[in-house]
Image 1 (cartoon, rainbow, N blue to C red):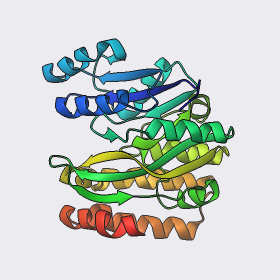
Image 2 (cartoon, helix red, strand yellow):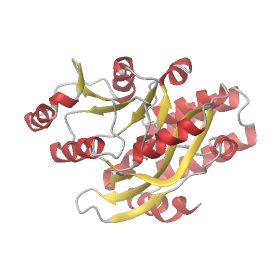
Image 3 (cartoon, one colour):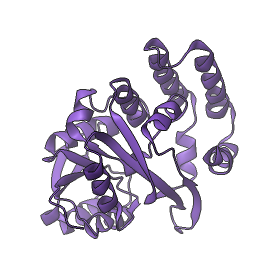
Length: 273
């Protein structure tokens, strides 16, 4: 790909993550058909010796930001965003695997559409240990479809997004909301009229395990949903009828449904809706 566009990759890692997964994730970032101009990695608190060893092996290619204690993803990403040097920033999770042409596809999307603020894509969910394919998450592609979709579900696979740094900052950046910092950000950006798009291609292979579906349940997670949809209702993005309907479904799935059934619901039913 012939392009002079420069961009940053933004990642965060904390002590509970596996060193081998971080290594594989970083390798997938650096072995791109269109590699990043810089990669910012936030160490969110103290890390294990194994994670530190992986970071040391890539130290010449990383811009490392260290936080004195674990602050959570939202704070870590905001601190990392400050260190990103370029207009375009690509998110990447430290346990996922980027498709080799991910950044090439996304840079091309931004070069085609100068008004674009956020570009994401599809993911393949894989078993965290065996890498066996579990499910795919494909989302609407166009701006209008995405903003309609946003009123009920998150419009982006967070680990796939590339965005304009100044647009994200103008919407307030990442704000704390238990496991929903990204969805809250897209909601505020949509309210401000920033343009969204998704690519149809699979951009990331995302590791998934039973713990993921546990994190998508529980009363605290439901309260995050309630706060987000209350924001939408208060800002006239959704009406009272949709607000009640959405929260009723989410209360059942997130607080009453057992984790094993929730896993089936997400991978076999919700992915097809």
